Every structure is written in structure tokens, then in C-alpha cells.
Length: 354
Image 1 (spheres, rainbow, N blue to C red):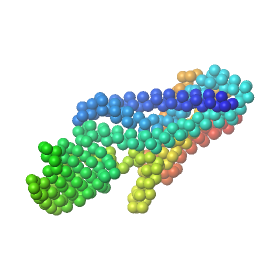
Image 2: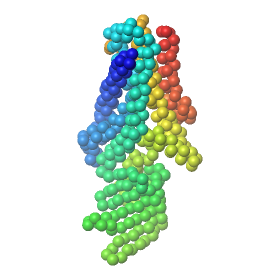
Image 3: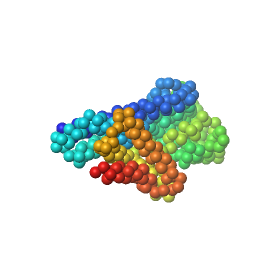
């Protein structure tokens, strides 16, 4: 039985990974055609587009894994059923329960893969992808560190320690370098706000470094002619998509402690928790479709059915998440409901067959 378990598990995992790669290639192709509209904007060329797609691939792979599990397992197990392999397994003494358990154990492996990608790879890769894309298009070098947000524009270095939103900043330091790459001037502003097409600095203290002396001036407020763009800042503001489950949990507690709206982050948190479980659910959905001996379907039909159900689940999950934010539904319910509907349908399928 161990040999059969290993064989079924490997085939299901292999079929899922192949399906995920195919879906990922299709999604990257459509994303590539969209990105061509920005080709030539700043330093954003084909090389930058391909790097952006590569960095976004872990996030897309993570989101497509439940759908890929359904398509891949439906194709793999369907091929086993068509070639009478499942019948031979039953004849050799393998129970139906053992076959189902072998499939679900493969789902546990895929769930661990989803956790690993979603926790340690996808968040950092997506953040870097968004930063890289924005920096290439706007010809600005940007970096987010534990010391705040850093931006380089020629000989000017900007450090922003706190962002209320992309149009309101606090604790800003501006460093001007001379032709010899030495510090020529340093400016600190308590606050900055963006209105129209320019920034307004408030409570400014400027230090000019001349030969042998430092000139300090203070100004209540002034306009700031900077190429710093709110669009670039938007990619470094904390986003639910750029955080792991652990970071989401910590940030939710921070928002609650400060009486701020944590609903989008709570929805993202439960969505991350449900993705490995949704992978198992998709495998469970496959079983009544394959094990129903009264229905005979060809390979092409299985691919169509699996694609429709898998992508349908992906779209329904995203749509319901947006509806949950609009209608203020509980985040846990919003994350569980799509997978719950598909699980209930699969359970009814089992009841009708067995």
C-alpha cells in the first residue's frame, strides 16, 4: 500500500505543479501584454518587464495553486481511471478510503508548499517587484528599510521616516551632495503634504555646509520642487499583499491598538490561512468527479471541466473578498465561504455516489 500511496501522491503533486506552471505562463503572458503599454516609460524596457514578471511569479503561483490542484488532480486521476489503474488498485486490495487518503496526503504536501511560498517568498518578491517597476518607470532609485523610505534623485537623497499616506509625510530628511560627492546641505522638515503638483514642507530646518562653517536657517513652510511622486510612494505603503501571515497578525494588532481600520488586513490574514486549506478542498472536489463510475469523460472534457471549476473558484474567491469589504462582512466568513461552498458541493457528490 505504501507503493500505491507514493505513486498516487507523486502523480497528483506532479500534475498540480505542471498545471500551476501552465496557468502561471498564461497569466504572465496576459500581464506581459498589459505591461507593453508602459514600454519605454523611463527606463522600463523589455528586460525590466521580464524581471518584473519573474518577481511577481511567486505571488501568482501562490494564488493559482488551489485551482492548479483541481485541474492537475482531475487530469491525473482521470487518466488513471481511463486506463483502469484505479480498478486494478481496488482489485489488488486497496480500499476506496485508502485511495482518497493518498490523494489528500498529496494535498497536505501541496499545502506545505503553499505555506512556504506565501510566507517566505511571495511577500518579499512582490514588494521588490513593485519597487523595481516604479523605480524603472520614474527613473528614481527607491528603497524601504527599517530606517524609513529612501529615495535617490541624482545628487539628492531623501529619507522619509513616517508616511501617513502617499500625500502626507512626516520626519523628512533631504541631503544634497555636491560634485565632489560631499554633503553640501541638509534639510529636515517635520511634515510634508502634496497638493496638485507640488509638495509643501512645514517646520523646516536647513543646514548649509560651506568651507569651515555651517549656516543654519529655519523656515515655517515652503514649497518643495521635488520629483518625488505619490505614485512611487504607494508601492512602499504597507499593503496586505506584501505581508506574510505573521506580519499581518502583528500589523492587525497594531491597527487595533491605535483604533484604526484593520478590516482589509484581517481579510488578507484569513485569506492566507485558507489558501492551503482551499488546496485540500480542490482535491476533495476532484474525487467525486473521478470516482463516479457512471460518468465517462474524455481527456479533453476533464481539462475543460477542471479549468472551468478551478478558475471559477479563483474568480469567485476574489469577487467575494471585494464584496466583503464593500458590505462589511466578517473577514473570517468572507475567507471561508468560497471554499465552504465548493466543499459542500463535493460532499453532496460523495453522498450521491456512495
